Image (cartoon, rainbow, N blue to C red; front, side, top):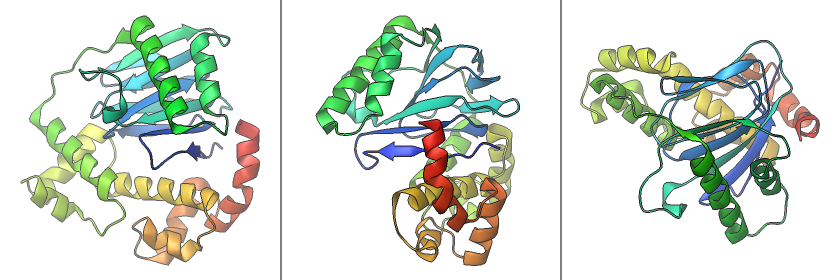
Length: 265
């Protein structure tokens, strides 16, 4: 079983770097650029309507609000390195579209850039230089993903997802999100499932659990405090949900997390 363990640096700044073992993840959107270098694995990555088989080192740059999905067939020990980049930090006047760059040699300069980013001790400015160098490589060598004309339901579902990503730690509800985007809760439930292939509650729960897993590995905060900080209002429900997702209790996850990361670094 693959755990969604990520090692994250500079998370509160304009650029953050994480690494881990590749795992399946449902369709989702972000409010920032997500740039991922994948090692080869049995499966594919989807950006909007483009499906990419990852049978070699592959780099994907997903622009804000574009759909992104990962499908892994069976178990894998393939690793990823992921960059989260706030748009305002990019050295460009125009926004980038999503890009795909495949068939990358493991000794390629781009791979070296990503690996350098995972090392400790870098200044924020140096990291930003490396990230912009990586983006220039991707834009120069990769294939831009064509813009997809989306129906109104996609725009509404994406806006709902944006609210969840930004406010998951609060007591946000489906009714409240529906009210804010001026549709009924029933219609939001319907289009959310159509666009993201999971329900509203599952999507929100997944964001919260992934954040709680990050806090377990990176802080010494008590589990009860983490439960409420990630937006889960009921400790018993949080413990059950965490065990279902990771096959470990929060305490076991914290204890074994560093061992898991040693295997994937």
